[in-house]
Every structure is written in C-alpha cells, then in structure tokens.
Image 1 (cartoon, rainbow, N blue to C red):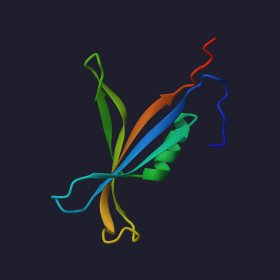
Image 2: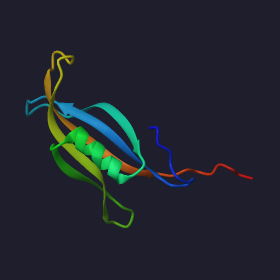
Image 3: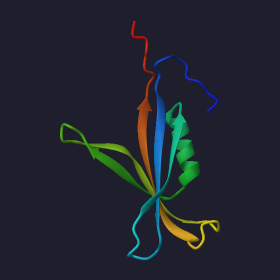
Image 4: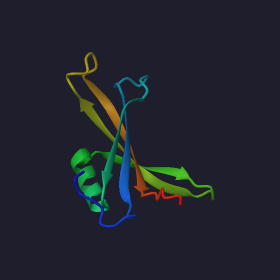
Length: 112
C-alpha cells in the first residue's frame, strides 16, 4: 500500500481472510485452501475493496463471545460459487471467505 498514515499511533484496519471451499456434494466439507491479509487506512477504503471483491455475494456476520459473556461482531463470511479451470479435476466449487477485522496500532519499542 503506497499511502502512509498521517500521524504516529493512528491505527490501520487489517482484514484477515480465510478462504474455504467444498464441492457440490452434500457429503463434502469445507476446507481451508488459502489465507490473505489486507491493510487499509480507513473504513471507506475497506468498503470499496469488499464491494469490488465480493459484489452481491451472500454475507453473514461473524461473532465472538467476549470475556464478559456478550457477543461482539468481528467480521463477515461471504459465500459464493467459484470456478477455475486450473484446479483440475475440481473446476467448480462453493466458496466461503471468512473476513475478520482488526485495528492495528504502532507499538513503541523504546524501552529506555
């Protein structure tokens, strides 16, 4: 990414994407086949990238349980059908991309 943050300590938004896929048989199970990390300066850029990447794919929310026993939304799961002729013998599959959002800040390592 060529853009830089305006000030030290200003957080970046990081997306960790876990790509899973399975065949069309009801007996098939989803398996992880790839992982990717993307970084953005703001949520406007995140939304633009998600719209370009996933368009109108089905989207569900991802939640975690906090230590206080509440649920917290941490991302989205996008589901769609995919195909690629380079993946023989499987040419078409059902794909789910699990997209987790993180806020990443600089860490001051000056211990003096």
